[in-house]
Length: 307
Image (cartoon, rainbow, N blue to C red):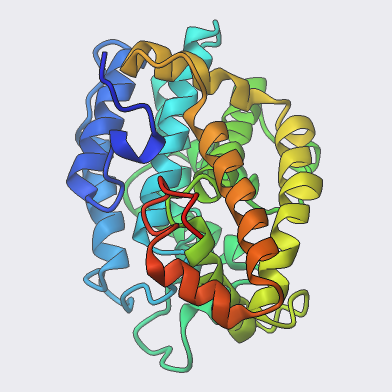
C-alpha cells in the first residue's frame, strides 16, 4: 500500500508511456490472457496523431482538449471498467478494449487536417464528437475491424456528447450501453478532477471563444458558472444518464492502490471548493484570480489554503 492517496500522485498522465503501461496493467487485472498488441498499436497512432505525425493531419493545437486530457479519459475509463468488473459486471475483452479506443479517439474531431490552416481545432468544438466518429470509422475500417465493432465504438463516443441522453443512442446490447456510460463518466470526471482544472478553464474559455459558444461572456463568467455546471449538469448526468456507475471507482482504487475511496470524486470536490473560495476572495477581478493562480496556491492542487 502506498502512502500517497491523491489522484495525481498515482500516475503521470502527461507521459504517454506511463499511461499506456498503466492501462495495460489494469486490463490485465480485469481479464486474463488478453493480447495487448492491438491496444499498443492504436495508442501509438493516437499519440502520433496528436503530435502532428499522422498522415494528413496537423498537430493538436487545442490547449484544453489535448493529449493529456485524452490520456486522462482513457485511464479513467480503464479504471472504471476494472471497478465495474470487481462489482460483478462482465465484459468481453473485445468490447472492453472498444471502450478504451473510444476514450482515446473521442476528441480527435478537434484536430485539423493538413490543408485546414485557418484558426485552430477549437473552431470545431460544437459537434466535434461527430467529426471524431467520422475519423474512427475510417480508421478502424482500415485496421480491419468488423462493422459491428465500428458501430459500437461510434456509439461509445456519442456518450461524450454532453446534451445527448444515452437512451437516444441505439446500443446493440446492455454491455455496450454500460461501456458507453463508463466512457461518458470518465470524460466528465477526468477533466473536473484534473490537477490543473481551474487553470485549464481559462484555456477552455479560449476554445469556446473561437468556436463562438455564446454561454460565457468572459473568463470570469466561465469560472463563476463552473460550480453551477458541476452541480446542475455534470453531477446530474453522472447520477442519472450514466446510472451512478462512477460509484465503482472505489473498488478499483482499493484493489490497485490499497486506497478505499474514489479519488476522482475527492479531487473534484477539492477543485470545486477551491474555486468557490478563490472567487470569494478575489471578487470580480480576473486579474486577481490569475495572480493568485500564478502564485502557486493552485498550481499543484495540493495547497488550497494560501490565497
